[in-house]
Length: 294
Image (tube, rainbow, N blue to C red; front, side):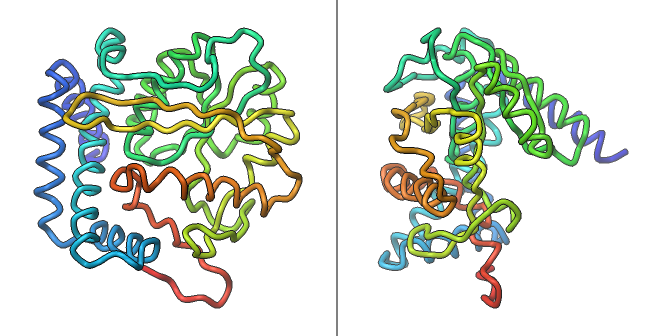
């Protein structure tokens, strides 16, 4: 009962925030993130562990600065889902800059996997890329525990023409979408356990990494278009950055293909290091016999 009530109140708040000016909502989220960072928490600890693992050369002062900036971005991203889920199309078109190295409206686009990465702007990028494609696409999502909230989130994420499917149904559904030449959006840079994963380096650390992208690309004869949703400075909105398709991918070797994804991230993260999703336990699953980092 309390879970359903909390979910409804949360959605009502997001819908209310969606009608307010974006700059106000963004600053509200930023301030809330700053406030919550002052309170010792498990998530703050995870951020520091991740940054220390990936950037051991940093000073304590720099790590503290980036950790706080990231925490502010992370909390702000949840508040800004109000705009991303419920803001008008006109509002979103003013807020999202599309910077694509390919023609997203090309009617002859081959079977395509749109590979999103977990920067704090991924929600804005994932919602708006449906609009930028000007055609129906498919998208995988991780279901939420609250069923009512999950249904609303699914509708909001697919409101510009995305067909949504749970990760649990991914293999069968993705291959059908690719056969229909429907672009498919998915994210693979999180730790989902050892099933369908391999351990390859990420910032020099053996990291449990999904192999699904290479396998889907191989079986579906699909190109892979990486994209990143970036938060612009000074509360100006977002940039949807779409890169050229990866050459010579897939290679046919799961480890090489998984490493390709992590290497791409290692190139992109330093540009906007405070925006990568450091609050996630990216190194949760360890090779057999290794102790937990967390």
